[in-house]
Length: 290
Ligand code: PAF
Image 1 (tube, rainbow, N blue to C red):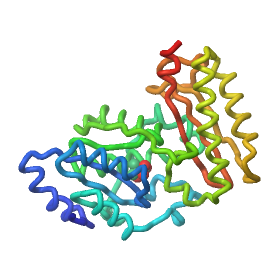
Image 2 (image 1 turned 30 degrees about the vertical axis):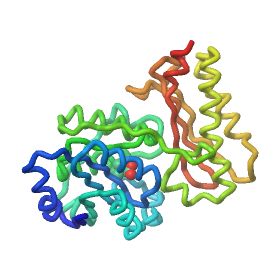
Image 3 (image 1 turned 180 degrees about the vertical axis):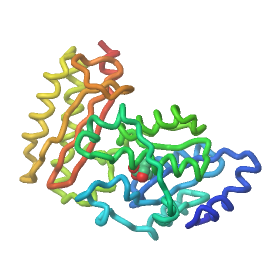
């Protein structure tokens, strides 16, 4: 496995792959690799000849007061995971390598960035789109793998790649969940055991809503109220849980829907014991079974 710290080293590591026309699959990460990342890397491994993983905690996607400084960093363990999963190249750049002197570009998808998480995290998605565009430009992979857990991020990257004709196919990968249903995330490491149980109420509430949709409920405001109530009253422990949003949106435009359609997605964000968590589920099969 090659570990490239600079753009030059990355290019060198990918020269053979490029000249021999092998398929390159790319998994961008911020490290602290967990089973969710493992499944992205495994998907990339199955679909590509050469697998590249980047590990870069991107400062431009953290707002003031967010956890950039505290974000879990465990490079040696991450390299071990990459080796175990047969990754070919790990790109481990410094901030200066990603944003060199004179850097002056911001990439944004305003139509999809101001809603849901973007409403409370100004600039976050511009930071994500900018770093992903930069990484795509450097790695120039055929495929790139993103988890559905960060659904808004996924949609923004899909739109950006299409609009800018970046030539990379975005592969959607299913959310990986703990046994209680909690979506796996690097930030779960901040949760205590009891907070983890409390956090699982996000998924439970969304599943109850999908069941209600299956039984015929289509009014988003009714479903949203029930989900809010279920999350707020989940009594597994004393940890605080502040719901930031519960929303039923169109999966393409991310606009709020008054009536649930086949293309709807339920999205939630909440703080459990101070840790901000997000999750989402599709409702397609529930609408289709009616
Ligand atoms: O999802 C993440 O880990 C990050 O937002 C990403 C896509 C690697 C960009 O920094």
